[in-house]
Image (tube, one colour):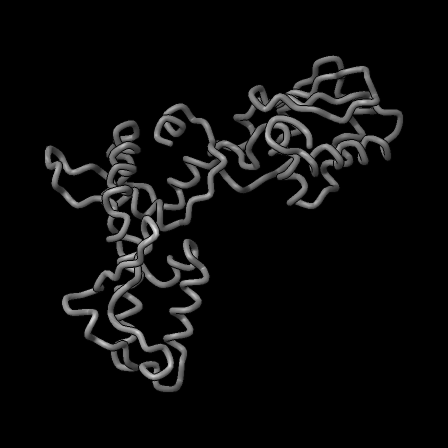
Length: 268
């Protein structure tokens, strides 16, 4: 991931937002201190919703319950761990196995549970991930970035303007004035944003654009004369291969078939 940022390559990954907050905790690796705590940040139940939505819903139900939660949930301050076919319990605080969760202390239980899940239980794994990322992307400039801006560096911008993509497109075997190309852009510009993103994913391998905008992309539409084929793509080169179909209707049908059934590097 660090190498992708270093080389200005967008990755099609979907990490929860808390991951990027953890990557910036701290934003600069503590100098010459291998024992320094890294990758730990303040977390809330809302953060857990992006990682374990069902667990988060259960904890929210615990907070919203109007009756005696001790009788209904029968919980204590511990969490169950399943590993290698065995289930063990981990106390959320000293003596947690003997402390029942009540209406009075349930907020503390939920907060400790969230902190354990998003910080404590994965500390060693995320510590390695943190140091791996920063070993390539170490920079004081990270201090100035918000977590969502780091996500944009990694994944690209979600804002998509197809008119801008049209302006930077180059053609191989076509000219911009040919009927097939005119039909293509009329179709693309009329599509819903989600289908436009699917087209971009089909042609480039990512439904996001570089942080500098579509103007920094290279995009090519190439001609192939076999109209029995569906449109194809070479994602490594941001290239769409388009046959010269006889009509706008056929082009639309073939294009939607291709992008809606694409899987991996080929068609299913």
